Each structure stands twice: as C-alpha cells, then as structure tokens.
Image 1: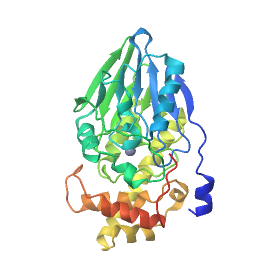
Image 2: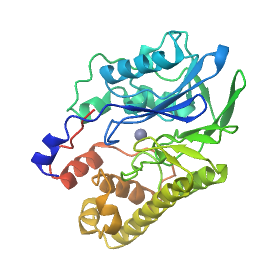
Image 3: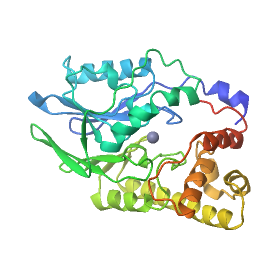
Length: 317
Ligand SMILES: [Zn+2]
C-alpha cells in the first residue's frame, strides 16, 4: 500500500447501525481494517439490553455507548459478552459499570490479562485515549445460555481458530450469529493466535447453525446466501494457508519466504495481506508437532508482518 493511499484512507466513514432482526443491532465500523471491528447489541424489553464486544479507542468506545443509549435508553447494558480477547473487542470493557457482568471463555479472561494493552503498542497510529484492562469476570468452558426476558442467547466456544477463546453469540430464535473474528468479510483471516488445523471445525459449527444473518468481526454484515458464501471464502483461505504452510515447511522456506513466494490469486484483493505470514507462523508451529492452541512468541511473527507489508502497518481506528 502506498503512502498516498494510506493518507487518503486515514479518515474513515462513521460507524453504521443495522437492525438485523427485530431489536437486534449490528454496529459496523468501516472499513473493517485493523482495530476497526464490529460490535452489536440486542434489546430485551424490561430485561434491558445485552452488548456483544466493545471496540478499540476510548473515543470509539464512548461513541458506541452513546449510540446505544439513543436506541436502548440510559440504563447501561445488563451484560457484555466478549467474543475473544483481542483489544479491538475488549478495550472498552472498562467503560461499563463495575456491576455489569462480562461473559467470556476462560481463555479470554487469561489472554486479556496477559496481553494487557499490547495491541496499542503494535498499532501506534490511533489516539487510544485513556485505557484500562478489564477482563471477563464470568467465564465458561464450552457453552452457556443467557436468558434476557424472552430472548435466548447461546454462547458457544468454537476455538481455537482465530484465537483460542473464540465464542459464537447465537440467537436461535432470530437465527442471528455474532461470530467475532472467525469471519473477516473483505479481509484476510488471522490465525496467528488460533489454529490452522482446527479452524475448519469452527467453520462447520457456524455452518451447522444455518444462520439467516451473520455479523462478522470486521466488514459488512452478511445475510441470506451471503452467509454460506463468506463461510466458503474463509474455508478456501484456510485451506490455502494449510497448503502453503505444508509446501513451505517441507521446502525449508521461512514463513516470510513462503509468504513472499505465494501466488495469492483471488486473495490478493483482500485487506490486510500482511496477515499471511502470521498465519504461516501458526501453520509451521502445528506442522512441527506442537499442540493445537499452544502459544507461540508473537514478536518475530509481527516483525515479519511489518516486513511483508513493506513498513509499519497502518491503523485508522
Ligand atoms: Zn481478533
């Protein structure tokens, strides 16, 4: 990406609010690139409202909460769910009242605490404002169900895929799924902290839901036939990474060499192409026989992502 293009993209369009089912909202932040994630919320009458994920900077989090107040009223959310530990989905947790429970997978709590504010040190472009680390305080292992009035909300752990703490937020009555960063609609998936080997299992779990509406972690909302299309896209990309990793590993190439030599085909137009080398670090880690979901040092992978990008990775949050 040239410097000229980077400058032109620095001001992003305003976030968009989409009512994807009656009383169920997706808060979409264009253009879905680094740290510009989606969140959502659902109204449940006198039971209040539930928030799915927060966002990255203090200003963006305050704008999110203010927009929700316009729709849901002045009471704070009854609860928050984090789909995974990444900072663009959790850095606003601290802005909720201390009494508001935050639900997340057990590894989400561990990884929020371990990562701290590291994402703000990797993506230095934005003004993050005031930041505090606040992890989920109500954790679960495989799944749990929340009831808010008449609304049923299933939290289903499907990681490791994007991270080891990936959770689907599934509304079975409305057939809406908030899938966090298991889906980047328009961007390359990111598997460095997840798994190449077990990503297909997470995709199968999403397919089996047969959702009418899929709210991705980044990029536009999908509905109808687009849901299967975007899941097929993710599956094709992960299969591509798996093949590239297997060939590169066998040929003794470094992840960066394998990424530079890759024939990207249709994936070349997807955003955040630098993720490919991070994804290959995860593929190589698994090819070396390490357990699925085990941790790898992130510094070398991130340095190689910067190298593949050709300089500091821009972030417009
Ligand atoms: Zn993420």
